[in-house]
Image 1 (cartoon, rainbow, N blue to C red):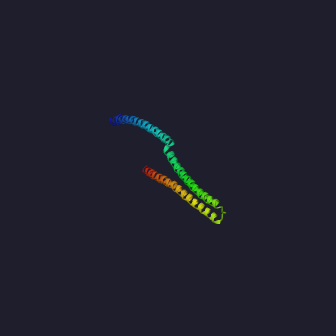
Image 2: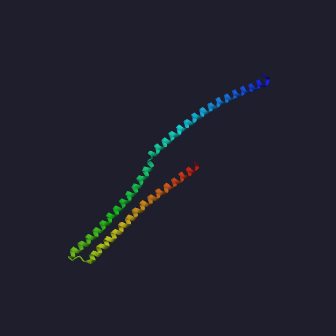
Image 3: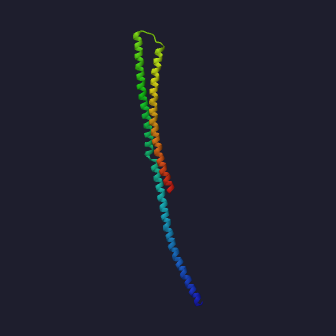
Length: 163
């Protein structure tokens, strides 16, 4: 072998040693990177599990539903109370009319029926007002919930766009 071949062989051996050393370093880096990736994947998996667990135990949704149910029940209760007051008032007026007729020993006539129907009409108008008030309370609660959900949707949309 001549000097050029020896020099080339030395250079080749040096190059091979460098490549082997580089491969060792790269293999170590790949191993540590793979460990890090697997660790991060495991962390993400744990976080996803925690998120699902928190969503499952989310009491806020239950609270909002119960609050809405409370508003509906409160509106129904207010309506029932108002209906009871109106019915009692109509009953008292009718009893007074009946007593007045009995005391005067006169017969019932069409004017009495007209008066009774007017009283019933007044009672029904009061009941309708009560129903409209109850409905407006429920509608207001629902509008508040829709507004809140719209805000949350907007925030989530913004977060999604950022991602």
